[in-house]
Image (cartoon, rainbow, N blue to C red):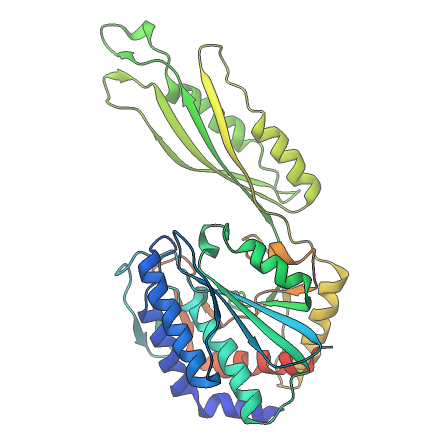
Length: 373
């Protein structure tokens, strides 16, 4: 079905315009009004192509989650994407430089939402049968943990034969067949304030205690097991001449297995202060469970490898250190991740896609919708 590639190539300018439309509708995760403007832009694309809107699930602090259904197959295939971004409005410009198009969320992952729409559009235009009912979930809170959308995603995964997650691949185009689990914690340390000159010995330094805890936490990293512990933020103290009373640490933990997840949960949640006049409080927990490489995932990858070969396209697979909504679906239904567009710079100011790679990735998704068994 090289004709799918030819179709996408012939419509590349139209595809690019749709991508620009969504990227220009900036949608920070925590800006509900802005996110809903992007949601409406997605709805308009759906109405234009399929003459119907997606079902909306309004949220108090995020944009509405979308559920779009296409086709009438007896079995369901689920596509998962998100339209929220890590960027505040105006943080980075939308621009094109040669083959690269830059913009907030263009790689992660608004171009992939456009890809889902165009994959369905191309199959319809070319009279290619899709044997499944296709359900698309486009959520608005993935970048902040999918707290309000995960149950919707999991419910649809339970009804699905296969889940395809449209997160970006590696720059090489490699698909993601396993992901680390993510644990997220906040640690508050409270000591006792005192004047650093007049009454130093009466103080109990929360910062000094934090330094000890940071050293301890850092030693929990075990690269052979795939476990990393990162103290990513630290806030505390009030003035240079005051023994600091309070410190907050933000801690990110990544694990490969459920066993290691349980171990790290126990260790972090049972942290103790090094002295009795310090109070230490841990809040948080598992943000996303690990996505192990399962036999069912390998089966989908093998099929995808063969299907991609029909496009003269060789795909590979990797284990990813980051989390995605695939972490929630992989133990419910066979899940393949990293099917989005190719580019670089996720969560970085140089975030961009490669325009020349779009036809190949768009055609691959369309072929998967029609040929996966």
